[in-house]
Length: 239
Image (cartoon, rainbow, N blue to C red):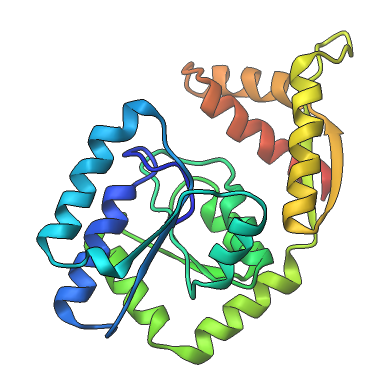
């Protein structure tokens, strides 16, 4: 698991799946590696998950990486066989998928948001449905116990993740502010970590088109929905 440790990102779901797999002894000696950090508001939630792990006698089978950048991130990805971040929210992207695939690690993700398109394009993992702990558990067991499939998915991801497209949040007048500077900084960090080529595209018109299109279809406008639709438009225009 490589993401912020909170309920939105489904950390409790992957904890429950890990506990169930160990109860079934479906993957003997399975260990659970965790990285991604947290904030103060996550502490009570994290304590609940640690309590569940301890109650099942599995504390020694969990490895936590407090640092999630640079060499620590490399050690994390080199130490795992598969990765899953079973988010509850519908993600329009997922840098952690690219990071895992670039490292040759296959992913197991719910069939929601942009995950099906991303994983279909990379060939570096599987999606499962329905989005439940039982199906997540079953999917992890299946991919883990199929060595040939796991190696093939890992190789696919490493070969197919070659470039990262990043939208620049300029103003409609074409001016660059703090958000653009932050985006360039984030892109430089992603390039260093992933070893991928980075291409920046102007996202002004895609954001406006996404906002207009969503207004016509549902009338429900949230930043998350606009960002997801904008990302799709950027990729379509790029392709």
